[in-house]
Length: 280
Image (tube, rainbow, N blue to C red):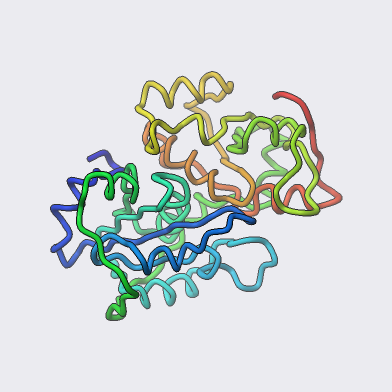
């Protein structure tokens, strides 16, 4: 087990531990004809609960799945049976994609003992491990948020980073979206990237549906021109794959990376935000 990732074997051995809380964080891009909640009801790891990324969010924001307030977040996850002394293990049905977003949510709310299941549900199923069906009704937990603002970047923080050229901005979107060649999947957004941003597509930090090993992760970020010793803000389309970059960087010893919560859904929709196209 690493500091932030756990194996399927480790989780399987902990399923009967009352302090182990397993969370399914599956989520699909807009326009994908799949229902994460329905798939959870049909197949999930025993004892798991479902975290709806588009439901546990800042309801006052018109941006997609923005981080909920500390009070709103605590209320929502208490309903999932989460306690402050739990070891939380988060997985998704991709293998590794949306689980890091919920991992980041919990870390931003001060819960350090939060892990991601490497390989996720596909690896669990491929190994023939047990599953459950249906919808659980857990007892309410006692979770209390301890918000850590250093892990969250907002519009002003990104403006300041661009002006000062520090922290570095790393964009997890695909290269053709970063360069402005491909349109954004969300209607009404401009194409391109933030001035000075570097591109490290989230698919590059993956290997067979799991996180790549440390040498490969280092190679990806160094090829993108990232200084791994300097401050970093991760961004993407809506803060999901940016959280995957944050996880990858945490594995390289950088658990302090902030995620730009609004990401391109905010930046690309505004008339007053500068945009560049082409390669970094």
